[in-house]
Image (cartoon, rainbow, N blue to C red; front, top):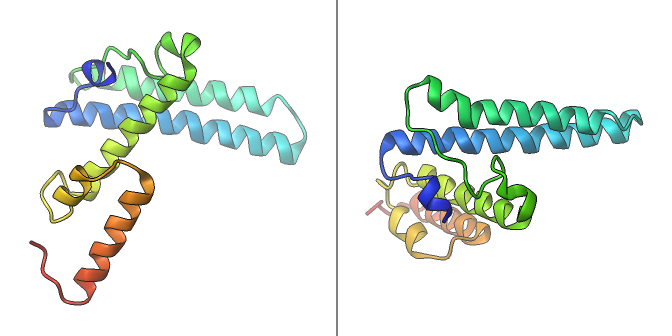
Length: 148
């Protein structure tokens, strides 16, 4: 269902989903910042404050910026910027993590154009597999193997 509402078929759609991912990362980073400020400064107010600021910045990146750039905006269903987050938070977070891994693989393969493409897209989509594949390929290339 997530892919239905967050398409990545065209370059423009992929850019919009990248902005969506940046919005999610903004929420995560600002929440982590709030947690650290709360722990080190001893004031609980920092956590909700930073979460709200991160959520506003994330929504701006994910929903408003694509509209302003005249791109296709996603309908934001089954993600952390949708109402489904209230009823199925675990599912929404898992869907966002899968979208993150898809974007990571796309970037590592230079848009599905280099020698990592087949290895990464044919294997399991786990972070250990992605890291092992990239490291092993870089090791092969450093020893003189060609990129085919």
